Structures are given as structure tokens and as C-alpha cells.
Amino acid sequence: MGDCLTYHYDAERTGAGEGAASATGWRRYNTVNLGAPLRGAPLFLQAWRFRRGAHAGQRHNVVFVAACDNNVYAFAEDSLRAGSTNHVWQTTLGPPLATVPPPPGGGTAQSNIPTPIGVCSTPVIDPMNARIFVVALQDDGSGWGTYHVYALDIDTGTVIQSAVLSDAGESGRPTFDGGYVDQRGALTLVNGRIAATFADLWGWDEGPYHGWVVSINANNLDDQLYFSSTANVFGGGIWGPGGVATAPDGSMFVATGNGTTANAAYYASLPPGKEAGDIGDYFIGVVKLAITWDGYNPSLTVIDWYQPNNYRWQNDSDLDFGSSSPLVLPDIGGRKLLVLNAKYGIYLLDQTALGHGGGELAKLEGVFPNESHSAPALYRTPSGDYYLYMMGGGAGSGPDLICYKVVVTSTGASLSQVWATAPGAPTLNTEGGSPTVGQVSVPSPYALVWVVGTRSTRSQVGPRYSIRPSAPPTTSARFLTTPPSRARAPARSWEPGTGLPVMGRPCTSASRNSSLRSRSTRNTKNSSGRGPNSRTPKGIHGSVT
Image (cartoon, rainbow, N blue to C red; front, side):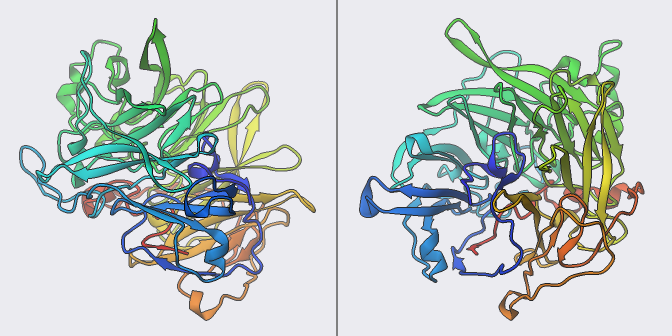
């Protein structure tokens, strides 16, 4: 198994990595109760040689996890496999936010992420400098939260450096206030800077919040740059589990949620022929950012943006783009593509020309009967074809997991459905995790697509599903034995290329279900008091398994 240093394996958020491509023999080795939820994904560093501390000179595969109570852990994989629950190190940061204050101006004191709220995103590892970076919300002593960024020593967990996220403000944009936002999008490390994303702290889109990207110098954590996704309205939260997706040239892409105060009067006030993005309000869209320089002064600058033609309707219906995260595709047939599965649809964009209003290369709207709150994954076959995997809410009447082939021609690019799970197989709905692809090349190319779901009881980890790539679709299921102790969380799998089930119920090649649900069904954020993806198990909750 290769390194997993960041969410979904890489800065592009492809979700494809080496290993985890064997469904046979899958079993639980160990469970370590950490006493608090894990909202971010575990990270993995292979054959790390410890240079400092009690384990100096030893070499281990290391698993890193960060819990919502602001405890960060490192575990040796060989010890976990042997049944030990001991950690290599544990670092406790400042106290998490235990009680959510009411939003300014009144409202419900209920967060999108249940308390405690501390480290709620996936960290990022910098092995060259033996550091792991985390962002933690801490109670500032007055009942409000303040965000801190930490660089921890991989060998010992010692804090190398820390800084408070503190925005001095500048003209033309709001000023960042960590007490109003949560940080669930995974961190990324590109060109020496860490990127963190933010959305609303409170449920029901309450509070005067904005979506934010904060870029932090990895060698000087006090050097911080700020971008707000909205300038004239509130909202535009960047909720997705992947946070920033980054292209090889360093360009950064984020997807945004609804503008909470964009109403008829706001739209009427737009200049003739202009839309929200033209005046710096990038809600319900995708934004391309880059670090630009004016002499020695860096800035986090908008390079391009996209909003669908029906963004006003999607905004009024709370159909966030920002419930998911973009995926940056490699160069395919000379095209640089970007894909996103949002609540309402799937969008294929040109990285080099997002198109502003309605400039997508392809879109498939109304794909899932219920919303999508997860990030997509990508698989490249040995023959050079590319497949995308999208997870959404089938709600028992449509597919939960769909596979598309990326089709590039001399005149354009599109997505062609290859297979989809049958309705209710599996029934993951919006609580399904983001797909990932595990692949091996020896002795022959092989891969599985994995999905983690939850049961109706949100504290339980549900099925782990997986998929193989080479045989045609079938309606007969092939079940692998699951130990009784694992009955609550069975492993399941499908083939990346065709949807043949290895573990679990059969998949079908049924056509895309384009039926829509009413707003009362789709609007999970307003009906449950939680934001998009708040229930998606990005990793494991409360235990290491």
C-alpha cells in the first residue's frame, strides 16, 4: 500500500491510490476507541523511519488520525494488526468548542457539526520536512471559537509551530471571523502553502457567515492569505470533504454553496447583463484561485469562475454546489478537465476556461433522487480510459453509485454512463461516503472502488462497499463471507469498469434516473439543522478500525 498524505491520495483529489484492491480476506484487525468522533479521513505513511523520540531508529507504516476533541494520534500499523491499541504518540491541542453560542442577531444555537468541534477536517502530511498540519477550533474562553493552525513533528507529535488564524482585513472583501464558520474541508499542501476551506458554523444557514479559503505559509504559519466567496451577500460556504482541489500548475478550485441573503431585490440590483459572479459573489459555483504576486506581496486571487445558468433557482432551492468537492482530471486528449457532483447534478468543466455563466462542457442534472454530499473518484484503466465514480442519494428509488466514462473528442468532452447500482443496492442515500479506488499493478492490473456508508443510526459505521473492473454487469450477487463480529459493517465491492459486484448486492446498467425530489426532501440542511456533507462519514467515527 502506498502513502496517503492528503485526502483522496493527492492534491487533485482523484481518490485513486495504490493498494486496497483485494476484497478476499478483508477483515477487521482491531478497533481503538478514541472517545470522540473523527470527521476527517485517516492518513497513511509507509515505511517511515523515526528519527527522534522513543521510537528513533524504528521503521513503521504509520496511521494518523485527528479527533474532534482536538487530539491527534499516530499509530504503528503493525501494532494495530497485532491487536495493540497503543499509540506511537498523542498530542492534545487546546480545548474544543463544547457549546455552540447562538448566532449574532438571534437564532438557534445549533451547529452543523455536533459538538465537540475541534479538528473536523483531514490533516495533510509533509514527509520531506517530517511535519503534519492540522487546523483546530478552540474555545477562546468566552464561549466562542478561534481557529489555530499547527505543524506537528511526525516522529513525536511535538508542536513545531502554531498560529491563530487572524485576518487584518482589506478593502473590497469581508473580514474573516473564525467564530462564525466551521472547517470541514480537507487541508492541502501545494507550493509551500496550506489551504483550508470554511463554511457555516450554525445549522439552517444561520449567522452572518461567508465561505472562505485561507492560504497559510507552511514555513511561517503567521503568513496568511484570505479569500471570501461572497462580497455582497452572506453564504457561499465551501462545505465539501475535499476542500481545495489543485491542478499541477498550482491553480486551486473550490465549489461553493448557496448565498443565504441573495433574494429578488439583490438580483434586481445587479448591473444590466451581469450575474452574481461578475460582482464577486461566487455562490452556487466553482471558483479558480491562484497565488499572485505584486512585487514581494502575495495575494489569493480569483482567476476564473463558473455558475450554472439556473444558479438562481438552485440557490433558492438550497442545492449547493459546495456540498461536494471538485476533482481535477489529468490531461485527456489535450483537454484539462474538472468534474463536480453537486447536490442537483454532475458538471464537467474546462480548467482553463470555466465559462462564467453556463459555460460547462457537459452537465447531468437531477441524477440522484436525493442529494450528493460526497467527492467523486477517478480510475485510469491499463488501456488509458478514464472512469468517474459519483455517490449520491438513491433514496431507494434510484442509484446510489454511478460510473461514467470520460469521453473526449476533437469537438468537446462529455460523460457517458457505464453502470449504476440498482435502486436500494446499497441504500446509502446522502450518508454515503466518498468513493475511493484502490489499485495494484503486480502481478496484473486490478482495482476496487470502495465506499463507506452509515446505518440509520448515525453513530454507527455502516457498509464498506467495493468494486472490481473486468467482467460485464450481472444481476446475480456474489457474496463473500463476513465474520459475525463485522456484520454491522460488511465489506462490499464493484468492478470499476463494469459494476460487477464482488461483495454485496448486484449492480445494473440501468439508465440514469432523472426524477427530482421536492425541496422539502432535498433541503437536508434546513430540515435537519446540518449542512451538506455533515453526515457523510469521511473516514471513521470515534474509533480506528
